[in-house]
Amino acid sequence: MVTLKICQICLESNTLCEQCKEKLRKGIINQEEVDVSRAIHSLAKANPELKDVDIDYVADVGKLLVFAPPEHAKKLIGPGGRNVKALNDKIGRFVRIVPRPRSDKYLIKELLGNVPLMGIDVLYTESGQVFQVRVSKDHASRIRIKPKKFEEIMKKLTGKTVELVFE
Ligand SMILES: [Zn+2]
Image (tube, rainbow, N blue to C red; front, top):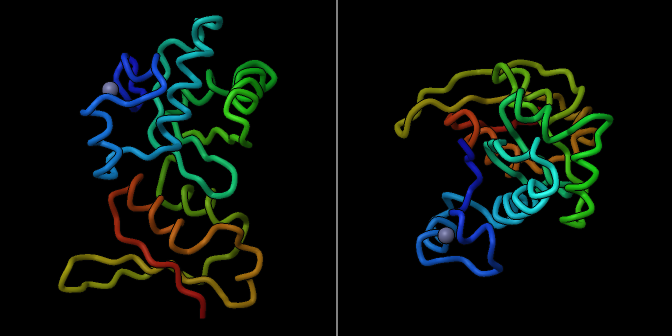
């Protein structure tokens, strides 16, 4: 089953139907997911390996991070990185395929890079649990991703409310 982010008709066209437009407007999907879905669909015509791939989420962090279930990520990367290279060329952006991390910890590591964490605290607020990821100020400059983007990606992929805190 293909879970690209837009319908078959919109995959083929340059415009979006009312339903897909509505998904984009409500933030259920983002523009990068539309672009990546179309590119994969288009590449799949010449490369059957890409016909049945799912993507979870696409985040624009300067480059495009494409999260996908591990077995699909493998296909998207392709032998020797062939498929991801084709995807780069098609979209004209640097694309990195990220296998859906096994745990929140791995995801945090993937997003923040190799920065030591001081801890992860759970706060209980009126609006629910908030996970504070604590990083030393000394390492702040090594983190490329914007805190807002990090928090947005964590929310999308884990459903959790996460805050990045420098102290
Ligand atoms: Zn559509």
